[in-house]
Image 1 (cartoon, rainbow, N blue to C red):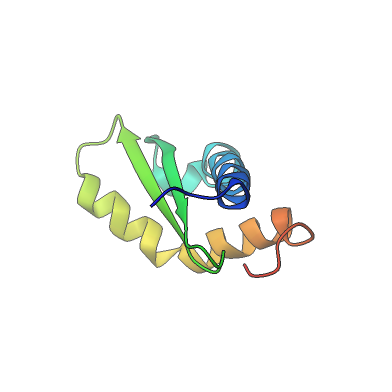
Image 2 (tube, helix red, strand yellow; image 1 turned 90 degrees about the horizontal axis):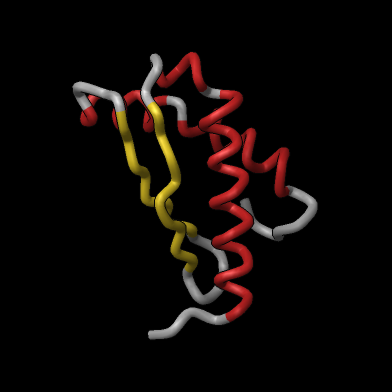
Length: 90
């Protein structure tokens, strides 16, 4: 199913802001790894975003993913602070 223009707009917004969070704010958490947001997919009602991560310069990707999952409330809070005025649900 093709994504709507609105879904693509919000996905691009979330992708850009998540990239900023990982590259600037959470570098200490990543321990020198280079994490990029490869893609973001939105549900049609814009309530759920699925972010696909790409990790470089890391030996144990599973451990890094677990560390990101442990700190997901911080990442979500930071994302909410950045895009809270532009979206309805964070």
